Image (cartoon, rainbow, N blue to C red; front, top):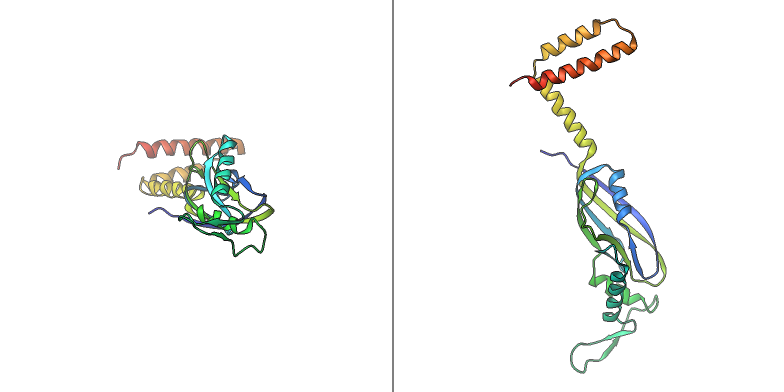
Length: 214
């Protein structure tokens, strides 16, 4: 059974008005800092007037078109029913400015949370994909991002390798290993020669283990 570890953190980002902030590298750095090799990460934006999206990371015109499209379907002053002869409805919630309620609607139409795979200590994204905070307000803001990951770390992998080696050695003629170690301890060489001897014995022991049959 694979042993998993769990990590939970909050990161803060400053946005600079309506637009997109690429946070892919920041998340990958967080993954590497926690030595997560493989697993799942849940990314949650803790606000109601900005979004999370995965989209084009090469041509900035894609992001410009996305912004223009969303502005077109979410007017600033109000909305009109799609029904014939529908009335124009102004927003009831407008205490924080003309971009206030439209920002909430844009958030509702997009995403506040993403779940992604981690592979080789990185987000498992496509070549042309990046993760963005999509700011819908016109002013600068501090946005908080929650990162929650469950996965296998590089430390677990090293520990498992050591456990496997110990198990293998325990089943491979322990009396012979004890004899080799005893003989090695009885050798009376200089420090440099002793270090070389230890290395030679370790290499010989590994060859010995791999050549033995069950």
